[in-house]
Length: 399
Image (tube, rainbow, N blue to C red; front, side):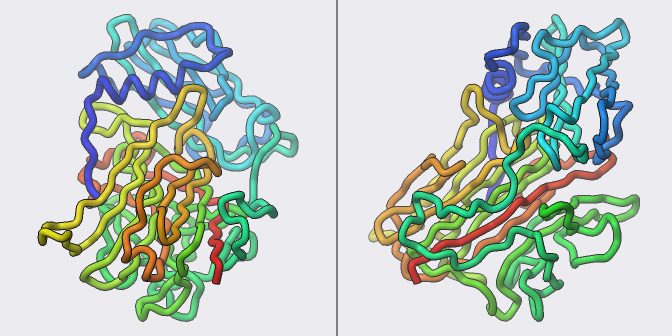
């Protein structure tokens, strides 16, 4: 896991293409230029994490900006664009009947004639009784890539959460076994507090990143192996996948990944998804994510470090990103190929390294905030709060 560097111009192209190249959007802002970021959007109502139960006005202000686009996943709430008043104020009605149920992310994108821009993501919960059709829960069918395999492990978070600080006596470990917690806001022990790192709601696992005054902050990680190495290990060949949505804000770093060695020394690491959040100067500014393969402490025939693989998976036109909607991220490993998947479709493939096939894998799901990523943390305007929502995780094997 390492810091990614982008130019703002490249990143803004990716952002505005994904945000504005939607068939029902009629007013297209110009692409902002490098150095034009201004953190100015403030949401007055509703509050972060609020429940939507009826039509609710979204009231916001973007000082210095003249227009805005508001979207929720594929739903463009301002297809003509929203012209802001002289103080940069605007409002849009959020109709829960037309939005997905459960966790949603309202994205506000504002700009002006000078090319300045800002992006704000408001996390809410659609609790209305009637909503738009929503894909939710673990599918009953076996994915095509896992045909001929059996379901070997799953958790759809419908029946409680068995987790402990070291994994002993529980299904889940709240820390990376056996060393190397890497988040700037530390991965924290389970807690009964309302703002603890883990919560369950309506079949979703909520990983809650929080920073109270005077603390280093806290966030969450899950691994199905305890600090003694006991627990669930996936034996190749296998296919595993996880469906989630997170929050793109400075420092957020959701990931789903595997390792073959939980101790120091040689081993493979398959990063199925590493996403880096945040918009503005000195931020990643990218709607895509990375699949990365590390061959730790392994040499090639010439005695040099065995090179890994690094691939940016871009968010395509008319698509949504990891913070705009739920997506399923997976990896298939057999003797010949390691193939990364998104929503059941292959997005990247590499030859399988011997260590990846000859050893079992433990997977991890985490919501890191800063730390080893190298990116700055700035969640002040979100009240130092951010959530990752996990729908399910499952593993298919031939054993």
